[in-house]
Length: 200
Picture 1 (cartoon, rainbow, N blue to C red):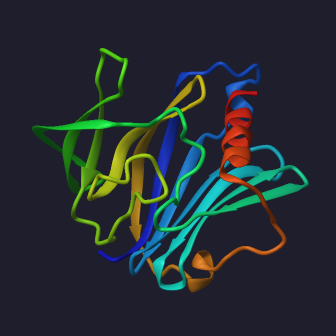
Picture 2: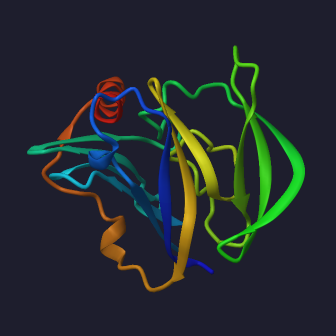
């Protein structure tokens, strides 16, 4: 399988936001085609959300934030592609040997630890979806497989993502084109903005 879409449900493990979960992001969609990846994480209210585009053929490693009428973009590089995850550095991994099926795909478990924390967390990934370096725009860039059940820590918030459906379908090339009319900002600026968006 080398192109399609994965739909994830979001659970808020820690939610410091003063906003109701009803208006925070409830799901995420990842579209992939020929080693290109598009991710969309949007709120149910207004034109607000976070998206990423990885298109190695055109050297695109972009993170976009829509905040109502405002549009911001960080243009990463293969050496420095990620922003928004300053709370998730120096990750340590351990293969547990456990496996399970998620959405019909055989998945493997990784135990994940951060410096200064005692309790490990887990994530599940599959090698049965053909995408090269699928995690280059998220904190788990060392994991060589598509994430199916995983978590993000953004500031003081912790979100869990669980794959619900995987569809094999033609994904238009336009998904992986650089977006227009966005203001280019620094990695640090966008990192702060993403934290505020999730934990406001």
